[in-house]
Picture 1 (cartoon, rainbow, N blue to C red):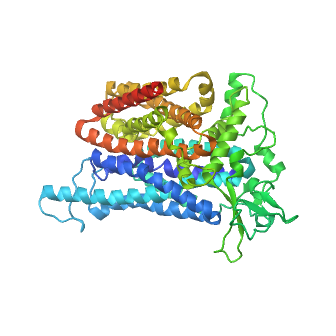
Picture 2: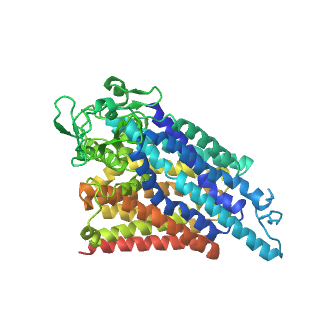
Amino acid sequence: MLFPKVLYVFLYSIFGSAIPYLPLYYDEILHLPPDQIGILLAVAPFVQSLACPLWTLVVDRKPQYHGALMSLLAVIGGSGIMAFLLLPGWLGIHNDDNNQDADMTTTSLLQIPTNENSSATASTTVTFCLTILLAFIFAFFGQPVSTLVDSAVLKMLGEHKILYGNQRLWGSVSNGLCILLVGVWIGIDGINVAFYVFGIGVTCFAILSLFTKFPPNEDLLGEVDEDADDHPHSIISNSNNSRQPLLRKQLSINRPYNAITNTIMTPTTATNENQNNNPPSSYFSQLTNALSIGNEVDPLPRRDSIVSYANTEYDVDFDDDQGRRLGLLRTATTAMDVQHEATQRIANMDHLPSLGLALSHIPTVDTTLAAFAEIGRPESKAPEKSTLKSPRVWSFLLMMMLFGVSYSMIAQFLFLFLRNDMGIESSLIGWTGPIGGVAEVSTFWISNKLLEDFNVSSLIGFSHIAIILRNLIYTWLTPGQAVSTVIALGMQLVNGAAYALIWSTAVSEVDAFFPPDQRAVAQGILASLFTGFGYGIGCILGGAIYNELGAVTLCNSSAAVGGLSLVVFLCGRNLR
């Protein structure tokens, strides 16, 4: 299927253009100090923990508006980012191309000129307030779009949603290339070009989203029972008026859907994306097979897991004049089903899986946050308090939050550190995108093999040690030297591998802690602690340290938090 791949390409042209370079824009153009930049960067992690479940709940209940809502949210959120280009004019901030520390004037009507110091303070305060408002607009409306795209692709793939990872892989490629190319262009024409690429990406994505459709299935459903309130998980069969459980009948929504031709793919058509390759005979052939963006799926008939029988319901949309019957696929439980099936397929292989299948095995952080929209449903129960109170469990969750703090203290300020403290040009900073992306995807590819060969303590410990050593190596580098530049950029290999390793291991460990009907929400808690609270606190703490004590102290502080995280984990493993 081409449509989901193109959708991911344009989605990550958004997240790979202006977004990574916002810290540079805050510093170079808006002249904000690092502590305020840290607060701005913390907005997205905190807000998306609430926004992702909210918008996911909306599209799950109203799937007929899924594409239109993605388009609308992208435009609203994108407008918040594009408005950054207008802030210097609104606030009267004049920037000298040859001096990044150019003085700000007070010609704007938003500024009240008194004396030089008070005017500068007032100008910075107004700039910060407007900037945080725009950052909130993108975090609430734009950031959750990635979750909605994951949801849309899962619905379009239908019965063949195991191919989800093959579609998502195109997003990873797009993200890395965009960060690189935008960085090169910034080195030529300045930071504003990142917003031009962003605007083009938003426009293309918004238009393409309007063509996102799902297969109609009202003709395949039986009559809705008048007593449906008493039996919400059953329908009346047209043939014998006997009550049948959900998903026992083959529905068209379970077949891959071509959103461009507006047709349902037949099993013959789907075969092109559902072919199985012979097991590779060597490591080289495994690598060649995995790097091909083709698909490797076993040719056995697909059988949904137990979760699938609970993730679809029928509803009558009374707001619609025709009262169409809609099959509602729940995003979080559908994603869990994909993960479950990918795990089973990989377990039955005697060789490394394709990259697509490996990515299907690892849920994205954004998609796991959508699980909070499912709390209270029978198939998505909240974790039991007795389990959460177990020292082994709460210490593991606390470790993940502390690791998120340590990780984000450097990751969110990395571009500022590389440019201001290491003296690396933007055209070279862009290489962090593909370097980190390759390391991350490669680690996801072999993560299941690593889980088989090593225990959880070893993998978690390795991730921590890698991040701690990376931070310490940064402090040993000499700015302006070519060798230091190569090493600093090469550290992204360590960064990407450590992130992918700890996330894939954490997902596996949380699944082991909780029964199947609690895993979706448990993963949501994991994601909110890691990239929600962890990233948010790390941004604020990192910005304050960077502003007051400098880059070396920032790296050492991040290493110290990482060490504390490892100690918490090891202590929790020994507590009973």
